[in-house]
Length: 282
Picture (cartoon, rainbow, N blue to C red):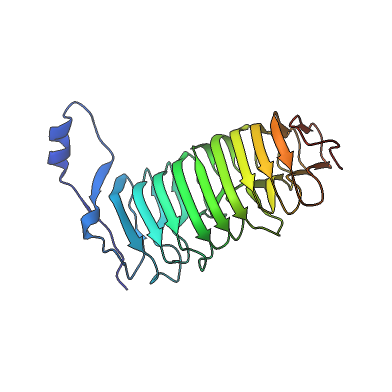
């Protein structure tokens, strides 16, 4: 089986661009990667994969991910659209200091998930921004074990699981998470934190429509602060904080069609200051 490793530009050419700076990162030659790969794109440490807006058809990739980052550091993937349901768009294990920007996923409903930083690995130093997805099977973005991360804007429509799910990750920031029809009728949420996530996670805004939940904190997670929410038409709770600690929603509005607009059950130090239309249930 062929794996695709994009060639580096000559080091001399890079040094000529900025001779006063010592570079570790190199620009990979993505022109050598076909538009419909037959094997995973195995990324290498210290390389930037800029596809310049190209679309990659991942329908041949039924194992692992279209992009595979295992045991690598300082990898950048940007300006690319992944379509046609590879098993994952990106599967990462022990992929540290990765940067993913302007990354789009479309027609992915037969995938297992979109972007996954696996439970068996370290995702520390992760930077993500301008991530969009539509019709994604499973969790659109799932991250484990990121200590120190910066996630910008995420927009996910029609996912089988959460739009963005953070597990056991801490000391990070999230911009605006926007989602529609994320696990509608189920228990996942447009934005979910779980499995001991936190502490010190700051979120700017959650916008959610027609999803299972808008914001869900569960399973001993703690220390997440959400500045503002705009949540409506959740099929279960709009906000559910369960068995968590020091989890706070500071403002916004929640209207659910499910069991409750807002619910806090178990844990300690939790609060919801958003307009929940009345009672915060337990």
